[in-house]
Length: 170
Image (tube, rainbow, N blue to C red):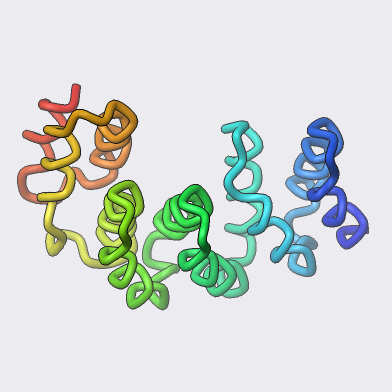
């Protein structure tokens, strides 16, 4: 059943993909065989579906983390950001991903850099990340980047200077 439902994650119709995610969410303990399709479905433009996809992945951290690590080097910025955000949500269960998270700090995308910093802090190096890229993004003119730091800084409250940057962002 999971395999058939997993195939529906690639359907052209949004309602079919949505139904597949809902079904897999209900069967998440049995969804191990379709985890590659679940990871491929990230990023989801629908936040509710995105949360369900993450819940499915969280039922199988040992299998999901390596699949997400592979997506951090994808060509599409949105896929890289979604993979980093998903890895961050695993917290210490994703410590094996720290090398690729550190490598993502060198990405050409500022947005990927910001998500990499947040992921590193949440996965296992609390108090050891530089918040300078957040400060730079907050001071920049690009409005899409200015929207990202508040959401990411919320998870970095233990980092020195995060509270100040969050106040600036808001």
